[in-house]
Length: 171
Image (cartoon, rainbow, N blue to C red):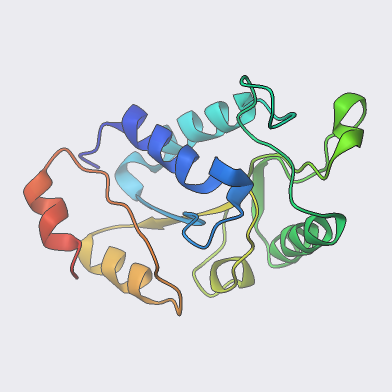
């Protein structure tokens, strides 16, 4: 709750949507403190919807295509599964249509709320531009959720209090 929310939004956007989420260190689970959740999520969803998809050779592009048709189908399967589990789609979730989007395997920035850490979306690696938002109340709950994963190659902590972040990181 003590983070600079605009900086944190930028970091989260880069962490999950950089390389269209096709990275083993993509930040696919966002743990956000309930006290700032709505404000943060509103900012995040607004900015995610403004990311420019397109040709990766175009310097204005912020989100390129996925690697293959089969991979896009896999991402779509994960999204359908999250919806079936009761996830609330906040943005994205459908292939873009027409124009240059027919020239590649594009998938938009997709953000879910309403799932818990036991959902398939939080338990599997999607390798796509799909983010699950998980709220927490306090540091104990944060650590419990963060550490309840078989993955863990990377994580980020957004706080104005570097001592707090430094204390939480090894935990």
